[in-house]
Length: 62
Image 1 (cartoon, helix red, strand yellow):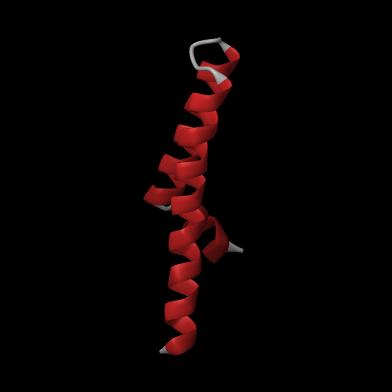
Image 2: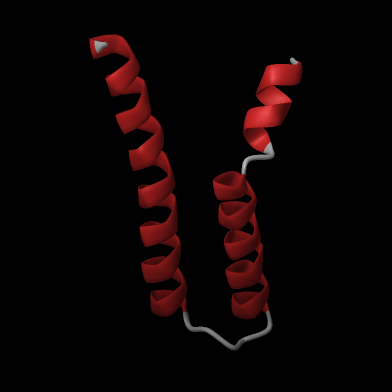
């Protein structure tokens, strides 16, 4: 449990959560339209999960 909490609090995870929160807030306030939100959010989430799966693949091959 402690290890999972430590992983959750990594810098990359914190940045991803903060960016997600910021873009949600901006879209709720009407500062961003749906297309801008979708584009940025997709890039951030794809990068986050892509690096996670890449790391898992490195661990299984080594």
